Image (cartoon, rainbow, N blue to C red; front, top):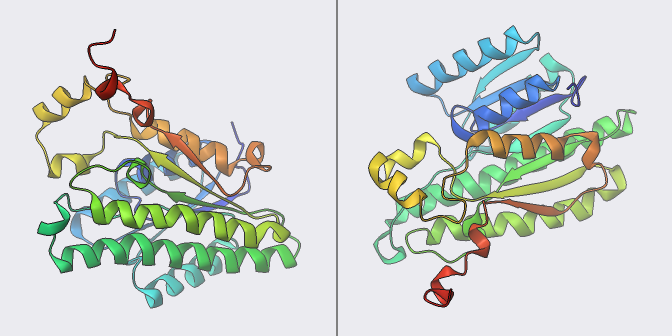
Length: 267
């Protein structure tokens, strides 16, 4: 407990799923939170509830709605957050947008939105976090952790995820490049590639019955849950991971290692 005490963490796309679970996990470990999501009636309700849960743990919390793909809005988010919270020690670029279609059937507006949120959003979040952490380093505040939510789709070719996979794969290389640049400031940059995680967004594409049926065919015979990804992010944000940078941790229940399709009938 308290591995993140006296740290301020900013998380984008925090309304549900991995973002929400990570915010709660970091609060349990002592961090104060800056919660970001795209403005809507639903997200406002989700973030108000999340903020209340974090305050009940005795942590400070700030809620700020902004579109991660909009540079001006993100600059306002960082400036206002630093003004209120004093610092940003952990930043998680988690916001995403997904449309599951074949590449040939994907509308350009759908592809552009995925690129805007995943690529532009990750760039804005990480660059602004890096600038703030460098400034803090020069002022004597040590450390800084920049984190990125990737995807197993960045490593595995699967139908219906082409544009999403392209954007997530670019994020992996961006993570490495940024990490190399920030080594002199002892700012760690790492990402996590989750496998198939049981989040509300999955229900936008297939039914509950279909999810449960497919889950039994996965190597671990179930979907992962957001808390499992959140705990991995807490580790990467903690002092225990001070000597880890430029890495992508795969948390997929063995999905990347699944060779059953080429060994079927040989057992």
